[in-house]
Image (cartoon, rainbow, N blue to C red; front, side):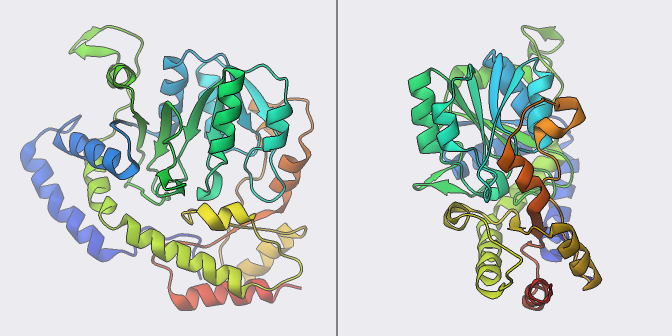
Length: 355
């Protein structure tokens, strides 16, 4: 059986982490200690941002961003993952949805440019590890007086004109969920910024609003990056580039090898920018294809089966044709750094044998 992803294949990396756990225990500081500070510093340098605040998860990161920016009406693509919707609702904001393109999951730029919908913040989501057209979005937002925020949960090591995603917005959110390209051994997230004032406020907000212990100065929650997870991320950051090179190699093999009239590929934007977090293909017969691959011993996934406006909690009585079509056609193939060449070949054969 070929798994969709497998998190415990890299034994050498695990040995390094186990060794470092002894040092963690000797230090005896389990919350907001040296590992957290070290990771925030290293990750900031990796993505090219001055300040990083570790959080419990990316949903909390988005929530804190929306609260600190006092957002009221938030625009987002309907094909975005549900945590985006949850963060918007948690922050007490109104969610304003825009359609996607049929082959990307990225926001429809033309629709966004022409839209007269009133929003004060737009959340750009770098879906599947590909980069949103952030340079255009930033220009439109600047002209309309809209604050631009980036959700980089799936786009660590994804670049736009040589700059890491998150570079073109005042605040950006990151996820270290285990299946992400840079994933820890549990939940974890971060917020990045170049604004020192926002940075110091967010440090308090993630820790009950405290500046000093047991004395809250402002609104806050309990959402700190766990010290053990920070340790894990420090070790995994060392090999991230190499792992993503392997993901991009698998992308090329899929693109060159898959030849099936019932299957189409993502847009050119994906191949230009993606870090290989997810490899989506599209088919009118998606469910049959998924079942066919399972019979071949290949596990796949769907990202995502329902656009935001079609989910009960976020339901809106609107029609967004491309987002709805995408949710019925998208199928994600296995892609992870430890995949063997033979496994990749078997996936290609499995897709090509579908009739």
